[in-house]
Amino acid sequence: MPIAENQPNSITRDVTIVEVGPRDGLQNEPGVIPTHAKICFVEALASAGLPIVEATSFVNPMRVPQLADAAEVMIGLRRAQGVHYPVLVPNGRGMDRAVAAGVEAIALFAAATEAFSTANVGASIAETFERFDPVAAEARRRGMWVRGYVSVAFGCPYSGDVEPAAVSHVAERLMALGCDEVCLADTIGTGTPAATARVLQAVLPSVPINRLALHFHDTSGNALANVDEALSAGVRVFDAAAGGLGGCPFAPGAPGNLATERLVEHLECRGLRTGVSPQGLRAAFAVLTPHLLRLRHPISA
Ligand code: MG
Image 1 (cartoon, rainbow, N blue to C red):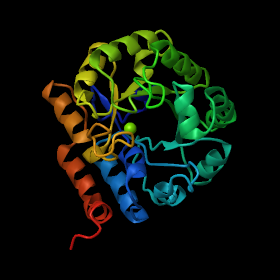
Image 2 (cartoon, helix red, strand yellow):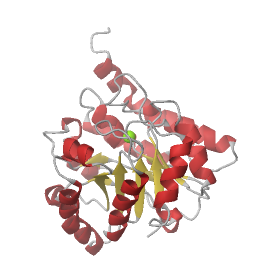
Image 3 (cartoon, protein in one colour):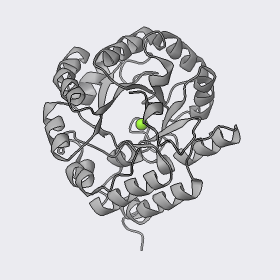
């Protein structure tokens, strides 16, 4: 069902922010954050007013050891009413683990280019969708909320420019799987306002505007300008990560995920309500700070 129908009634929002820090952020940290700190972080993000918090990932723990405790996080989490806590599910095995951990919302990852798909998940786009078929069918059977991502929708680190038609084709296949929301991701942060307009023009015939989300990275400094372009086209769901967690794996040292606090400030300054408390966000990030300092600066006293 569209997100708007799933929101707590007491909160009025003009824009929905999907917090991806606990998953997209922490998977790119150089080490592992303790499980109890992850749980506190996710709970604090929901308390800050974020209606959707992508909590972790049920990908192969050997490939993403930072999130190997996905089941413990989901089992330990006190879930707030009306908040979705999607987790990444790459295949049937991940789905089995997610179901056993009581997950009620999942995210499926597809890519707009064959090169990225092969590098990221070791499968072609067609093979990815073969894996998704039974997962999506089970999710529907269980009444789960399902989000579908299109990675590298604005540029690919392996094959360069991406045709908007290729993005639209993958988005259409995610809709056909029964996804409640499709999210187009600027995985390497090369998107511009002009590219945003082109991609939206290609995708909007296949994805209704109230089921479309955008995931911008600030690697080239364009994330907020891209948000403005998408807002003018009617998009009202954007991803962000508290503290800009995660960086950019394709440009070491450069910013990656748009920081949630910057997005909140940007939107609220334009008179758009997000329902997110800046103080609450700071409190959530403070949970992680000592652990991040330990990982990033291990030899400082
Ligand atoms: Mg990201």
